[in-house]
Image 1: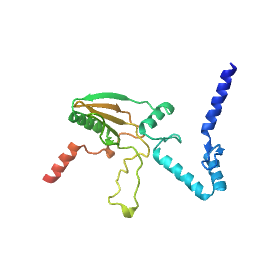
Image 2: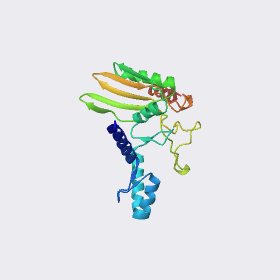
Image 3: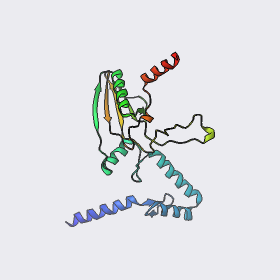
Image 4: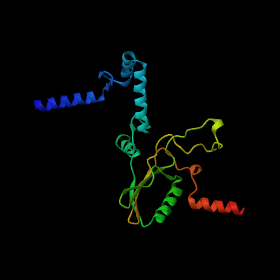
Amino acid sequence: MQTDVSAGAASATTGKNSERKWCKFCDKAFSNTSNLRKHVKNVHGEGALQHVKDEEALTMKVRSFSCDLCPKHFVILRDLRRHHVDEHNFEEEVENLVFDSNTEFCTWKDGEESRTCCHFIASTGRKESASSVFKRYLHCHRSGTHKELPIEQRQRQKKGQGSCRIGKHCFATLEVTEKDSKVYVVFQKKHYGHFNEVCHQRLSQDEARVLAAFVMQA
């Protein structure tokens, strides 16, 4: 019984130590980042402080998927979505689909995009994960933050309906695997952070071709 208590105390101590912020210049530990920065500035100088800030900025850049409900950051969208499932009660709706050809998959995707007024765009290129097995990942086009250019740098007028970007990450994704002439799709179909709005819907390739032909004839 005593051994268990000691083990628990040791575990708690380890947990506390892992949460402390350590100075890389002298190995002193601090309870939070603010105290660490003050120490670095006062003891090691402005140059050392800037080095610490640069490292923190790089870490934040790598962890580019930020939770909109708490301060946590993640490296990939899947981890952010799992965090929302575990911590913020997001309920996934996952379907596993199989298509006999890429044409059949694209037809299905066009229909799904038309139904939801959202489009799935590639977040990674088509990569060969094994011999003749290709993977690609697509995410909702409403994801992310719109970066507005200064007026003098804009080449187009601002959209009347505003940017399609929602300022956070939508969790609807397609994980696409091409193997043996078939297309296997893991479809997380539940969107997050926006409504299905016609004003932000893009034309499918077929619709764009029809419109272009109509304009040419006119």
